Image (tube, rainbow, N blue to C red; front, side, top):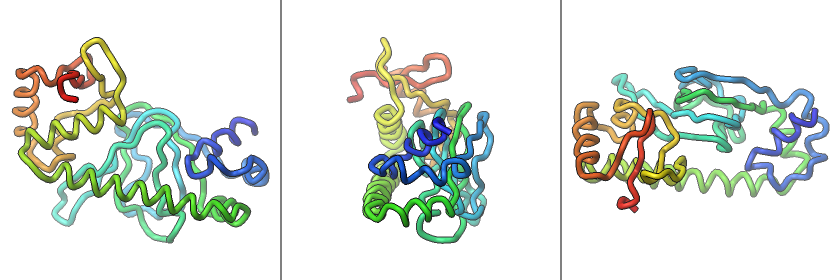
Length: 222
């Protein structure tokens, strides 16, 4: 019971909500699951009926267009929330969420969300503010990754990911995400071959390194 309450309180949307608001829903609200790399949290087209909090690990949000081409829209890590659309409308997921590594996720159903919002009038404004920030960040990221040369796109992506998911290491900043060349290609909208060439060039110029399975961004990039 206590762990489930704390799990719900970990949602950024609910950080200012009184603990007693959760007392009636904790027993049934939070569902915890574990995922391995490649497992799908939800598919594009699934109903938007739950909110998901990433407790450990990370997920890539992948959207497939009408031609069948995949594009990575975002990488979400520990402490981030997925599925906010469940708060506002009954519809379908605009993208699939696929685990990049071993992950642990807590989910909250739409019904429980509605109950919490009804019992906490101030929560609505907090939700709007949070979603507004996410929308702005998404548009900024899309603009950044779809303009400039392949080298600029890849380097901008690695800089962004190092800020969001990086940790200091002797070589620079380690991006704690297991990204393949194809993942990066899907992010920036170019071929895997072009990404491979670009990564080789950045490594030769001492902008990046590879430590085990992680990319490391050298301090000169900042």
